[in-house]
Image 1: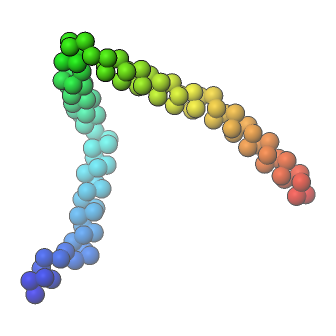
Image 2 (image 1 turned 30 degrees about the vertical axis):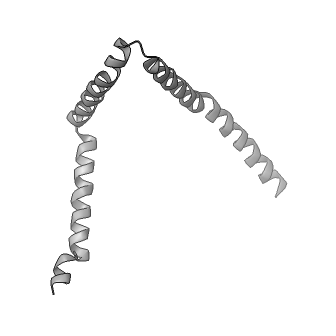
Image 3 (image 1 turned 90 degrees about the horizontal axis):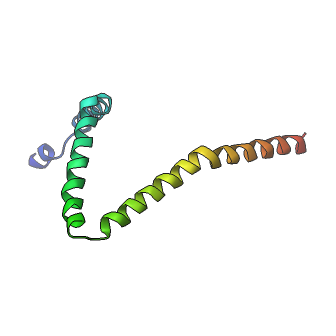
Length: 101
């Protein structure tokens, strides 16, 4: 009997999952959660990078360069290359439709 009490039933697990999903959705739609996350990110970044910058370390520069490069790559993919890929797919789709007619 003690093992049965320690192992949660499917109903208990299902209720926990529902509660967890509801709390996640509530967080995602609440602006104060995003504000708190942004504040935490800024304060953690400042606490990490300020001593490095004051010591003359190159690490903040490298991290900044990697962040800019990543952002530029992602924005280029979404802005330019995705439209080109979609155009090529439309041409291929049309060509295959003509081929199989």
